Amino acid sequence: MNQAPDCPSPATTTRPGEHFDAHLAQPVFFCAPSRLVIADGAIRQAAPLLAAQGWRHALLVTDRFFSQSSPWVKALVDSLSLNGISVRVFDDGEPDPTVTLCDQATRELSPDLQANPFDHVIALGGGSNIDLAKALCLTLALQCPIRELVGQSRWPKEPLPLVAIPTTAGTGSEITPGTILVDPASPTKVAVMGNGLRPKIALIDPELTYSCPPRVTADAGIDALTHAIESLITKDGKDFDTGLDPDPGYSGRNALTMPLALQAIQWIFKALPVAMEHPHDPQARRMLAYASVYAALSYGSAGLHAVHGLAYALAGVTHDTHGSTNAVFLPYVMDALLEERAEELGWIAQAGSVSVAAGAAPAAPSQAAALVRDLIAKVGLRTNLREFGIQAGQLGQLIEQGLAVTRLAKAYPAAGVNEAYARIVNAAFHGTLTG
Image (cartoon, rainbow, N blue to C red; front, side):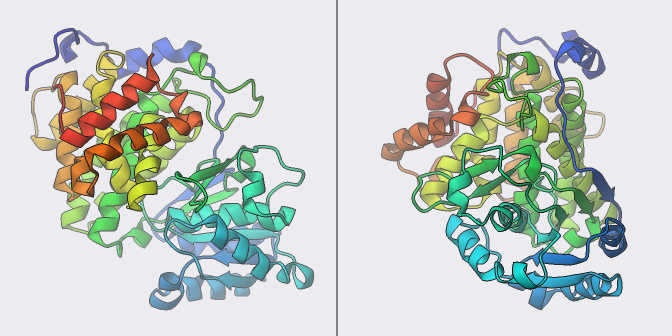
């Protein structure tokens, strides 16, 4: 691959640490769970920790796989009971939860509020279960349909406290301020955002990811990679439009988020192929768990942009998984930002080239997108829109619906966002990279 003409070579770019020094003037608004536990076997620490908060009545949100085909729900319920915490299990979680499911669950669970009012909610599972639990923290507290809360970040009552125990390494929902739901009345997914939705406690247990099927590992790993890369190359904090919100969920990249993102990228390049081939490799699973948390800590403050906006549009058409719809756009968004983010793409290229061959020479910034696309293909995910069954006549719809996710479109870190989205979608359709 030839280096793009106007991009500095890695030898002429500053080292990451020096670049982060230059970002010390960026404003920082950083939120994270008040308690973050990362350890093999962390789930066994849950009950004593929750009891120490004074909580006594839990709602556990999960799905039938975990309640019927894993030992974790029973073990957690038994441990909570021994620690004086009663538990109501709701196990009707499903992939890509809908606003309809949330409202049905609210109606089903509301009678429990009269007898033993929940004082906290526990989410066990992937990002879908955590997103559903976040939504229920609001709707059970406010007793209203979730659609009424879309677009709001201030509520008349605080949501119920949430404890998130993820079973995948990628979603980052255990860190972030939003819940993403499918709305049958909307062409794209809808979001309810606010820092009050960030979990109070996140327990990250790499052992829970050992049983993930290869496709789930791939989806989650590339989702985490997307979070890290998008937040590394998003708008600077000084340029980010928070709408003058004094308590913003997302506020642009800064000297705190960028090192977290870069470390996550390095870990994912190194560990994801290993975990795909050796699912019980403890070091690879730990590395992916840490990478997911680091990426989420980064994007949970810096924010996301074109990849996720277009992925939501694609999911509205195909209903494919979140990781796969992110994956197909990620290299092409990187490629579109080669001029604006050459330095950061050089760091990504170096991480990718070193993972391919020990002692390899640093790759050029123009090679970053291709290295990421190679990793996506290696773990079995699709790399162009035609592989999703998308036809040329549908590209305009994807562009329009991607731009309609305005909270993400406005964070795109270059001028001419409409034209940029069009170029990205067309490149993703044909599978073309300038590098």
